[in-house]
Image (tube, rainbow, N blue to C red; front, side, top):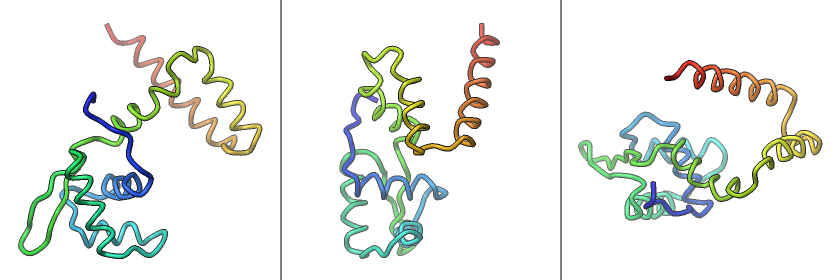
Amino acid sequence: MDHLTRLPEAELTVMRAVWRLTAPASTGAIRGELERSRPWNLSAVQTLLTRLTDRGFLSAGKEGRQRTYTPLVAERDYLAFENRPFLAGRRGALPGLVASLYETHSISKDDLEELRAFLDTAIDGKEASP
């Protein structure tokens, strides 16, 4: 994960679309996924896919006449990379962050319950490991 760099917002948006699709995903499928939220220019999508390939986030291939893309970086690995600096050196800051998000209505009670269930599962899993 040392080779990762922080992605600009447009490239991250494209990566999120690729991560939601089954690999390898065609340019058309990626554009279709992106257009679920807003229109995208085909040329812009192609440019961003080329940048992501050059940066080592995607591998490019061909299936017939279609260009296809496969993620080389898992979403969870990228998110861990992106969040690591935020949490580094802030021991105890996570509970305050979650409380602040809840108080400002940025996350819901349902989100907190989902977080609790995740933590319970994660903790139980660690305790069971040797």
